[in-house]
Length: 361
Image 1 (cartoon, helix red, strand yellow):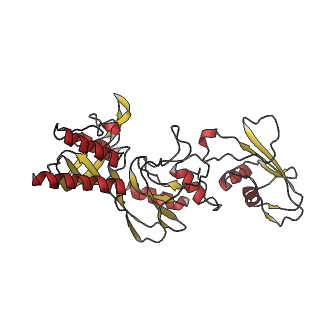
Image 2 (cartoon, rainbow, N blue to C red):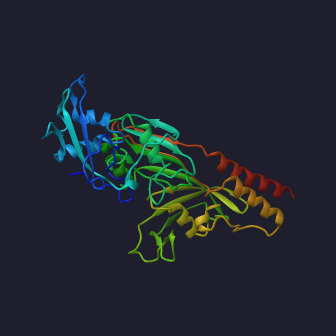
Image 3 (cartoon, rainbow, N blue to C red):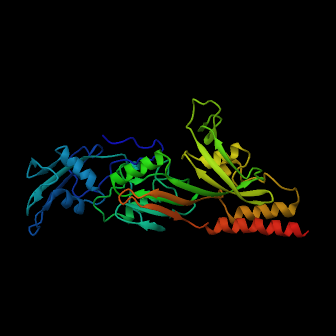
């Protein structure tokens, strides 16, 4: 029996729509029905491999499911995935048609690949890239980019929930993510996240001076009942999901503080919500009010400086900087570091410059 995976793993849909080769029948809204006549010169080949090569966007996983259900026929007889096609065979396939928005189309989107082997990948996601399709973002996501990158791997199905993303970060958060290429890898990594043995450190610039040099924030995170677009720390211990964030001050910069956040759990918007909970909203975090001038003076020169900072880093100042885990196949301790992206690095330098100039006055 497969072990339980973490509840905060994002699972993708397990079906992918295929384009028509030759559509047959009147049930086009419910089924995809294909008929293929094998070429005279075709060498003997497994039917699942043959159809995977012939049907655009049809995953091998989905083809094999159709065969298991008796929905692939050769010359009128149901065959299994291992059936070897022969010249002039008439192959017919019937597969359920999934909802259009569930389809993950491979898209040629650049990926910053930090590490890759046959079991997993580590990528450095830029700010602004949505991690997975949903809520109107059905194209242009990291999942679409991964589908393109591995489109020639017959064993990787971008819609199979047993492979792919193990964890996620917000659209406007930059940094490191690990992707599983095999089911065993995803199960193993998922359990590492569940058992809190992975190592994840973030850099964040927050409003205000964080007085304590280090601390731990514990508070259940759930949907804000007054604003469904926000998460919040809930006072009722029976609601929301248990969440723990450790933080350490790296640098105090006048009216903002650079902190390192270490995740013990991984909840939606966890760092953003927890830091707000202790009175330190992330700089330029629009959803949680950080895009307003929350600390500082009323001088117009200062307001102009902060607005310039908002333009320099036009998103919440949060970066997933380090990621550590045990390799599921080799047992090796893996550790990756991603330098601050230019927008955050420039933002921090601006505040350092502001403090230096203020101290000279």
